[in-house]
Length: 353
Image 1: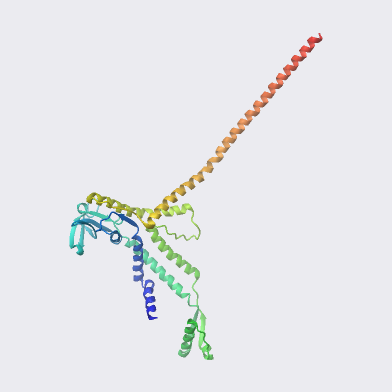
Image 2: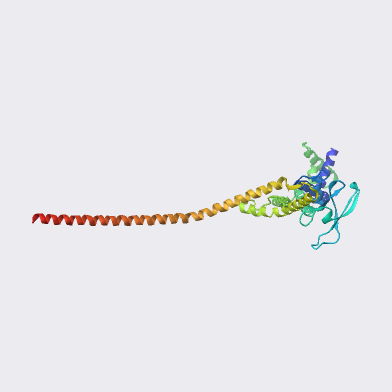
């Protein structure tokens, strides 16, 4: 029983102790972002897992040759700035390799940066870790307060002990009988103000919003729609459009660095999006196709009535021409018949004469 209580208190620190909660949140997020990119062709001396860990937590690494092997080393940028304000030197201290050296960035190796600004993911993850922790503590507090349905007061210590014993038996599932009338007189119960369920719902939505916003910043489409209704295709497309630029920048930094390493050291290193980030890219391409098809389908009916009207007008014109032709032919026939009758009348007159 004591061991269970210790386990509960241990994990309770992830909610109550803010430092523990923030550290746990960041560690979990980094465990997920480790699968953001898939490296291929790396030498055995550069594990992909460690390469990404250093990039995402330190912001940059310097790939250079130490002895006969390539290593991705973490250190500090410095030296005189070039014409674009970029550092020119990289200092490394690695006890395992017995290395303490300052390298020239342009000539001694290849610098890989995590994003276009050379920043790690820690500032972004730390911000959301603090927001999420505060929201989770508020939600936990509101949840605990829902347990208090009654407030109990006792007039003296004996009555208080009797009330506590009565409650313990109820918690353990035992029925208890009160044998003293003084208990009823000494114990008073009042209804406690209950936590508004709407308030708890708002806290849940707030916590979900913080987490979803972090995933969106990391390039994953996590829905935090507060409308409580389905999003249409256009709204989803606008949401997806803001997901890609940051991840595209991170991928570009890695791809360009891999090309420079290949040119300098004759390796065949490549990097692509991995896990949910690759799936997000595929979904975006499919969504773009669906949106284009929907736009085309919407535009098509607008052109159809005009074509039908034109064809109908043509048919009406053709009908009118046919009717005029038929009337003309009929008149000509009647004229011919009349001429024929006149000719026949003249012949009869000549015979009688």
